[in-house]
Image (tube, rainbow, N blue to C red; front, side, top):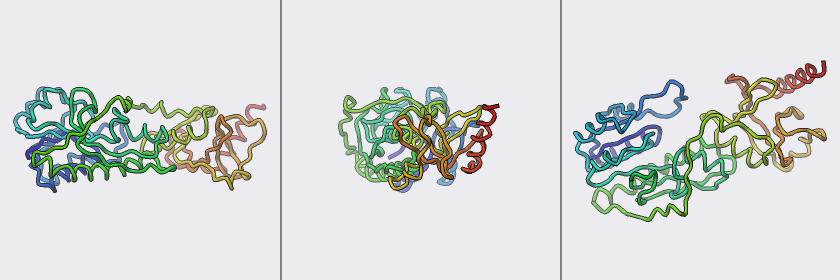
Length: 315
């Protein structure tokens, strides 16, 4: 099997290594340049290709005629897409006579579209996974080749789930390749009517609405916790990012009683920072960052901040 790979991120790194280990002849890798405005916490597929001795080019726009020509010159049997960020045109997919396949970070047909891991955590799912599927013009809509499920534990952040999904992607591709190489690629139904589609998320989508129930607020914090931009709230002219949090255990609740009439939002309580939510539930803040500082604000400092602000308002 001769392949062209469009790849990026950790899934791109691991799946490219699987192809190499299975003896697939990867003729060309097309990847992205790092963006200056992005936190690069993941592996670079360009580095992986260089390590494995595989030719690579940067291609931000798969509709660029130069990209199509590079694929045509590589003469692939198949095309793979592993977390490449752009939709690949049907005209490029057609250059691979044995098909084009994408690795998606959910259990299709659920969570088609962008950032599926973050959406799954945000919605309180207890399971997600990785799916290898055929590519067509409609996103994440082709038949399923194989998929692997992973659990989402109640306190898992999206970053932690993404690590599991990366392993699931590696396992899925490793398991599927022998049949694909032999020309017996499984074709399982991808019933779109039983699934869901979600668009991308922006940093502003991490704004916390403290009037919402505690479970919903906590899921948002988990879904965008670092290395993602983080859930945030604004207080007295400062932006606070909730970088780490947990739900209090029942035994801890008596020590976290807030004064009667407390409004939803951030509070200092008995040496801890807590978020009071609209249903009366609490979120205990483990790491609170202020105004872009990467060092967590201690609970004592936050309590002093609230005290000073209260004095200012009463002057």
